[in-house]
Length: 116
Image (cartoon, rainbow, N blue to C red; front, side):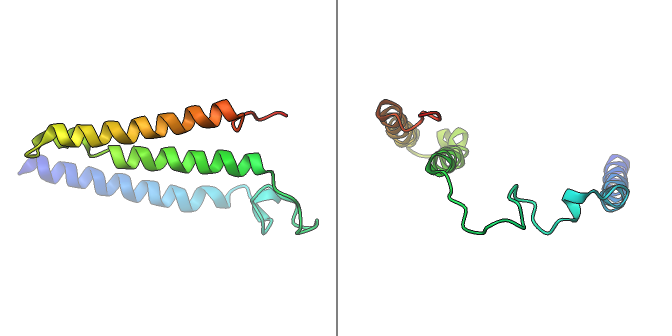
């Protein structure tokens, strides 16, 4: 019981210190970029109709696709405890093979070339 109390006390103290530091530290040195209403990398005083690069959207969509793949495969280590673990691993392999084939197709079509 003493160990549990010690761990809880340390975690509460550490959380409190980190919360206080996170509120106190940004107030120390506000700069022009942080005081600006836009922190997205665009000039807030320029035109709002700037063209976006389609390459940026392609990379962003590919990142989201592979991020979703990781989220789908995270519970895979616990799949061996199911009634049919081979079926679980077969479905996971099918997802990986499909995404790998899609990536190879994009690569062969030149969709991943950043410079023209």
